[in-house]
Amino acid sequence: MLRATLFTATFTSLVSAHTAAWAKGMYCKGGPDPNHDDPNTNTAVNPLWDLPKDQWWFQHDRGCDLAAPPAGEFLELPANGEFTVELAHNRGQTTLTDNGNGASNWPDGQDHPDDWNSWEGPGSACLEDGAMHTYNETNAAGTAWAISYESDMTKVTMDNLVVFSTLQHTPWKRLATYQVPDLPACPEEGCHCAWLWVPDGCGQPNMYMQPYKCKVTNAKSTTPVAKAQAPVYCADDISKCVKGAKQMIAWHQQDGNNIETADGVSPGYNEKCGWKNGAQTDIFG
Image (cartoon, rainbow, N blue to C red; front, side, top):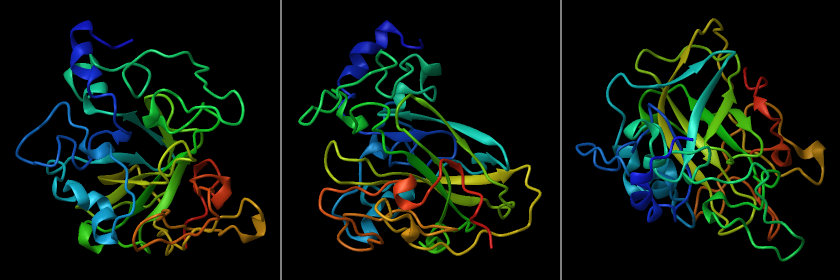
């Protein structure tokens, strides 16, 4: 366990937050001011809800889209391999700050049993760590990554930002490992990626879209990804599931939404919207 006692007081006040994926290549890694590196930033973790598209797109509402990673720094995606990021409520609860002295096996930097669970039947409260938006690991909705082969963020669109990997029952532990399909190489200046999440209840019906500069390593394929299609909620009828390359889920915003569900029903990066767990191998065209 990687938590130092002297950091406990510092991070206790920071636990009441949400969750983001932390790794090299992320925008807002040091906060929204590119001239100041904040080791305890949590700017990137806050969810997106009821915003116009020009505000929720790549977290423009908080200026994260303007706080790019240093030149030459990328999230590396090994083709036909895997990569690991840290899911946490604050950078200080990851190894990106003070060699991980504020981190634990969990996103909040605290200790919990592996079978952490608050579900006791209908009416149960969610986990005391509300930033997890779940009752237990099984209820965790799943997270995803999408990629656009545009080096210029202003050229990234819903049509060219394609979900390429999902990980069921996350966010849960701090370390999360995602599988990568046989992606082709990025342009020399890199690609843009997004970490994505739509919780399944346990709080406000919001979503997450976090920007990254990324590049594919060990690429051998030259087959491009196809144009992304809007996902469809299909838990009630699998014949409605969209096959092939899919867009991220845009939901409960003022505009730019691309999916509809019944009241009280959440879409997600899982089978309910046609995503199998792991690398998405059907996205090429």
